[in-house]
Amino acid sequence: MEYIKTITEWYVEDIPDFIYSEIADTLGNDTTSVTLLSTTNGAVQLNSINPDISSSSWKGIYFENTDLTLTAEPELGYQIASWVVNGETQPASQTLIITLADTAVTVQAQFEEITEVLVINEINYNSSDNFGTGDWVEIFNTMDSDVDISGWVFKDDVDSNAYVVPENTILEAQGYIVIADDTTKLKSVNSEAKNYVGDFSFNLSGSGEELRLFNAQGGLVDVVTYSDSAPWPTEADGNGSTLELTDAGSDNTVAENWIASTRLGGTPGWANGTVPVSIESQGKDTPDNFVLKQNYPNPFNPSTNITFVLPQSTKVQLTVYNMLGQKVQTLVDGNLTSGSHTVRFEASNLSSGIYIYQLRTPTTSLTQRMVLVK
Image (cartoon, rainbow, N blue to C red):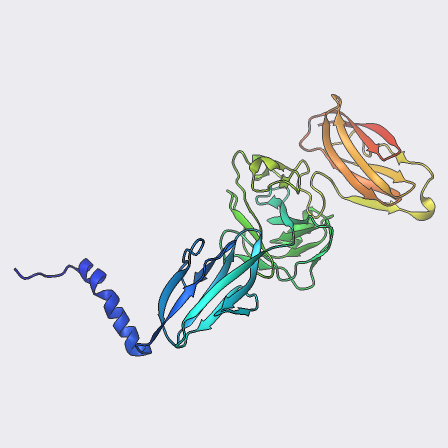
C-alpha cells in the first residue's frame, strides 16, 4: 500500500528543510555559530526568541551576512552595564545589533545594580466624578541627592504605552514628581500640585494593572501591580481617593503597604497623608511667639483653613485628632520657614463632631478645637 504523508507530517518533516533551502538559495549556504554566555540579573532576547541563559550558555546556527538584534532585559533593580562580544567590551545600550560574518560570535550581557532608588509612591487610576484629575502616578526620590530623570520611561503593562520624561528634568533629593495623562485636569482640581510632567497618551486601568518605571539606560527601577479589589484599598476606585504608599521605605508590591488617601484628590507632588502649606507672610510681620489660630470657617463642611505662625524656621507637626484622642490625619510633618502658614483640612470622609488640631515643634505644643457639621 502506497504511503501518503498527511499535511501535518509534511509540515513537521519537510517544511523546515524546504524553508532552509529557500533561504540558502537567497543568502548562500555559509553559516556561523552564535553563542550567548550565561549571565545573572537579567536575560537577553535574540531577535524574537528568549533563550534560557540563567544557568548555562546557549548556541544557535545562523546564515552569514544577516543581522542579529539582541535586547537586554534586566531584572528589577538592574540595568545593562556592557556587552562583551568575542572578548571585547561594547558600550552599554539596551539593544545591540550584530552583522554576522564568517567568524563565530560569542556574546555576554553584563548587568549592574541601579544606584538610583526611586519608588512609585501614589497612584490615581480612577477619579471620582467630582474630582476628575485624570490618571497620574507620583514618583518619590528616596535618596539624599538629586536625580536627573531625563529620558526615563513610564509604562503600564503594554510596552507600546510609554511616556518619556522630558530633557532637563531633575528630581530633587527627597522630592516628588507627578507623571500625568492630563496636566490641565490635574491642576484644575489640585491647584497646589507642583513638579509634574505629562501628558502621557494612555489610560491606567480601572481594574488594576502593572505600572513600570525605567531609567534612561532601560533598567527597571520600580514596578507595582495594583488592583481595585481587596486586599488593595477599594476606596481609590472612583470614590475620590488615591492609592498612597504608607512608607516610601516599605515594599510597594505588597497591597497592605498601601492605603486610600484621606484627602480627596490625593496629594500629588507632596508627602502622602499631608496637605500643601502656603506661606502668607514673612519678615517684619513675623511675631516673637508661636501662634495657632482658630480655624476658619468654624463650624465647617467639608473643609476649613488652619493658620499658624512660626517665629523661626523649625520642624513642625500639625495633627488632627478626634475626641477619643485617635489620630485622624497628619496635615504637616516637616521643616518650615518662619512666617504665617495656612493649611486646608479636608474632612469629606469624616463624621460630624468636634475635632482637635495640635501644633507641635521641638519647643512648643498648641491645640485648638473645630466643629464639623454635616
